[in-house]
Image (cartoon, rainbow, N blue to C red; front, side, top):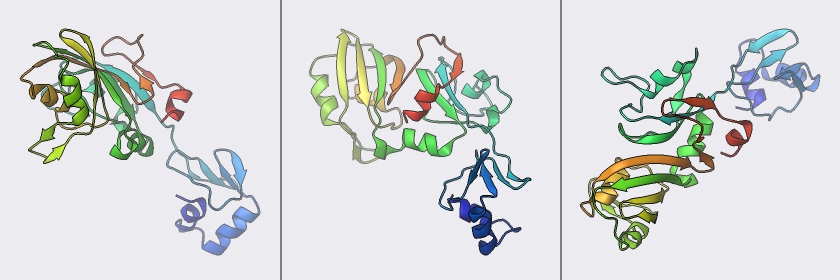
Length: 230
């Protein structure tokens, strides 16, 4: 929201007062005196006028988690352990998941309280690649590669998946890059060939790669450069 609109929406100021406050540089955002009415402020911004605190703000949180098997991608579940149960932070209930993984799928998960950031990460328009390591029951044949590139028709959604890149690593293993996140998408793709997925592990989302130092169930805060990469 623009700073002038934020101030004008408060009952203590009208538009004329807001213009005067900004012109006199009596408004501080995150400790800096500002005069630009078009400055974008968010729920994380600390906003003051003179000595009056209008919005305390709160820290933006960005966490990387190595999701283990047997864990639900949810903030609450009556039966199973959730990814939020793995987080030991006082404000963890303010976090939401930026992309989900199936119950037995492992690997990179991201949690944040920044809705704009998570939308940039997950919205289809950005087409950020998600990289998975896959192991299957049957041999992954070379002709799979072209089919993954062409896309698969999913009758339930009445759509064809976007092109995906499949790289063979061994007879039963591959690395897969997709830009979508349909329901059980990877398993359904391999299911086209009656080939059951035995292991699925997400290694990367866009520019963010799972920290190799994180063991299953461990997490850490994202580094500033990782946050800015999205």
